[in-house]
Image 1: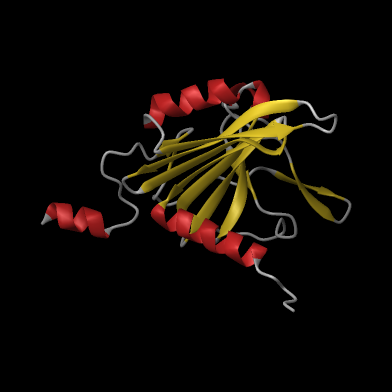
Image 2 (image 1 turned 90 degrees about the vertical axis):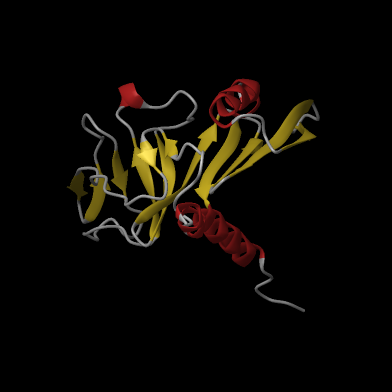
Length: 195
């Protein structure tokens, strides 16, 4: 009976590590907002203090209160930026007040094998790895791949090269987060002006 309850609850994963950089997927998002400052008539965010904090999306920086359904940027103090992350923060998906997905960039071809090794250490062998070749503007070829893990209640997707050779992308989602991300992608790719 307990097993049936756990399987019916999408936020609860059996046997999957639901933490990413200290954040817990499937749980209430309760992080503090980064400090704000006024630059003329514009609200801007300052640097995090001693703990990670979040920034609202552009155009919503004047809003207050908890995040219920949105994607926000979690920024880390410089001394706490995870080594796997390229940049100063990670994108997190919040649905009904719960953290349901995390996305972050890696350093592309420069550290793809190392990033894959780190993901394997946490999630085991990938469910699938699809190799591919990418080129730079001069025609030089580089090996790239897509790796994915389908775990109980958790989905991990790693593009070793995404928008450029020096950028990869990792998305880690709960079942609900993955469904939301897939729907957003379908909507983005939909022909807005069909024939």
